[in-house]
Every structure is written in C-alpha cells, then in structure tokens.
Length: 355
Image (cartoon, rainbow, N blue to C red; front, side):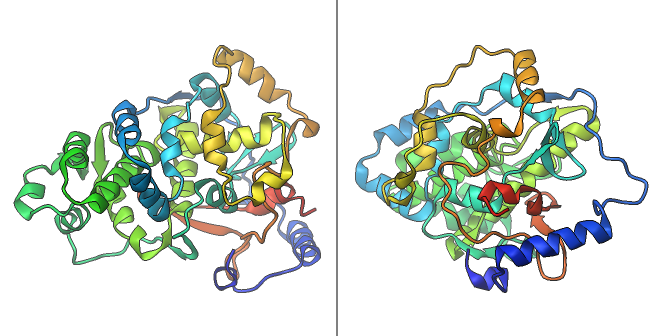
C-alpha cells in the first residue's frame, strides 16, 4: 500500500513488539467487564438479487467494451459468476465474533482485510490512500444520477422512488439505459453502478440505494471502495448476530472468495500471482464447488477446524505492507455508506506470514 496512506512503514519486528506491549498493557481493548463470546444460533437471510440479466448483458459485449470496463472498474464483473453457497454462508455467520470484528473458529481468529479485498477487486484506478467518507454536498441525488447516466433532470426525477427511509431508482430503469444508451462509456458506468447496487451493497432488492450512488459518484476520483465494502460487511454480520436474525446486505460473493482463499485446499502455482494476466476473482468464479453439503455439516467442519487446516496467507496474495492502525489509534476505522465500524487486523497478521 502507498506510504501516504500508512504515514510510515514499520519493520515486522517493530510491529510485533508494539502489538505484544499493547496486549500486555490493555488486554483485549474491550469495555471493562465485557465478556466476548459467540452468540446463540443466528437465522440469517441470504436472499440475493437475480443477476442473470446482468450476465446476459456482459456476455453480449465485445472485448473492447469489456476492456473499457476493466480499466475503470477492475474485476467486479467476475462477482456476477461467483455462486453463494447459502448453507456454507449461514454456517459461516455463526462464527462471526461481533466484539472483535473477526471470525473465531475455536482458538483461531481470521478476518477479511483491506489488502485482501483490494487484491481481489484488482482495479487500476484505486488509490488506496483516498478513502470514502460521506459528507454533505450541495449536489443532490438527482444531479448525481444525471451525471452518471447522462440523462435529463425530468427523466431522472420521474424514476426516483422512496423505499423506507431512503431514495432509490429501480434496476429496470438502469437496465433499459444499458441496452439503449448511445454513449458507450455511459453504458459501462451504468452497468458498474448496477453491480455496486445489486451485488456489493444489495440493501434494496432490484433497486439502487441513494447511498450507493453517492459512493459510486466518487469512484471517478480514484477513491478506494474497499474500506466501505468491508465496513458494510462487518456491520451487517454484527447486526445479524446481535439480533439473532436478519438479512445480510454486504457483499456475499466477495466474502465467499475470501473464505475459499483460506480454507479451500487448492493446487497452487505461486508464480501466477505475479502475472499481469492473473485474476483471482476470475479463477474463483470458474471453480465448480460442491453445493450438496448441509448447513449442519458445514457447522461441524468449521467448529472442528485446526490451525493446520487454514491457509494463513491466501494463495493469491503477494506479501505487502498492511494497514494495522490509524494515527494514534490501535485500530482502523472503516467508514461505510450507512454507518461506521472498525477492525483490528493485528488479529490476522499471520495471514501475511508476518509472525
């Protein structure tokens, strides 16, 4: 990652000494009297948007349009072909530890990190030190949609709907634009927006939420969406665990790709990750996995994981600098589009073979 974002780069030995001192002085950094434990069984709803229309549009595009998409939005199109095993996902949620913002399997802690998600998304325009924060802007939802779509104010205004406490635009309207818009770049932009609204932040089924469009409007400036994606993933997991039920509204596809990178034994060819033509999400989307394993069986598998069962560094990760604290804080704040949370990637230093 860029040094501008980290403020300084530290040796592994220095980081280890700092983390051990911090653990000794502050313990687990939780509120006094708080006992961290995995909650009772959570009934999580993993309903997904139907993505076949998006897949059909992508398949109809020529290589030139696809390359334009990759140059501007990276590998997010591969998310359309990553299947979410609902039995595995429901089982995985049971091991989310809301206090520590990580998955706890017995004595083993593991968490998706910014570096891993950045590697998976592989977008050349991402500038990792430029993070998203939702701020007041005089530019309205209508103006942002006009800018992204290239359509007139009357066209946009008549299609905006109110769902709950937020505004949105139906997917059908964007689909029609992708199919008929005379501007090729606008078709690419609207297609990418649809992936962000239907796959990465699927709060409203078949609708694009205003908050998603606020984030998307600023991707052109090179901001990284990764901390925001992680924030809403962590927030949704914690919300479901806290209430004992709920619908997951983070990106299930990315979480599945991350999981398989650590837990699914694969034939690894290490040099592939150094190739410009290597795409970890593309590889994940192409793998056919069993989907006949029951939720109960997955629970049993995850409950009995041993340290030796885990690939500590995902096979598609190249060793690099990691973001493990922010300024004087011994944790990293993550700003989402609907709220904020934090994580402590020191829990996962072993994922990079740093210790």
